[in-house]
Amino acid sequence: MIEIRVFGLREGVAEEEFLAADKRVQAEFSPFQPGFVRRTTARGANAQSWLVLTLWSSAAALDDALAGVSADPAASAFDALIDPATERIARFEEIGG
Image 1 (tube, rainbow, N blue to C red):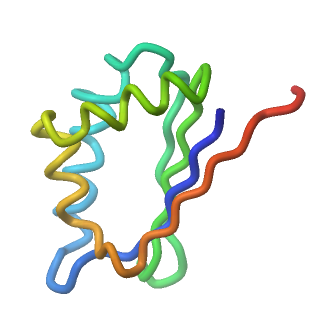
Image 2 (image 1 turned 120 degrees about the horizontal axis):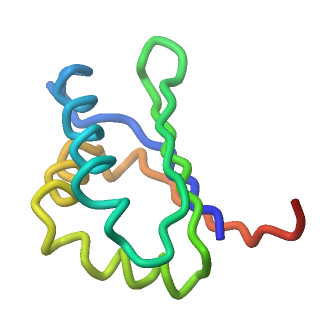
């Protein structure tokens, strides 16, 4: 399962603050989720948009991880920096590869 999140940051959030929060998620949350495979973050032009691409072993693994986001300090701090009006999330089922 592939999850793609595209978003902008909330007004006043510095890139350095976001990158520190992203690093915490990479180290403290994602790798400890059952079914987590890989996660990468990318910056769009002029840092106006961001993308997080995460690979999961299954849709159930993704759902289980999402259920724990609000209880995890690193993941909830990361989400607090995202402007919800700009966020788009899509899931894709891998068909080969």
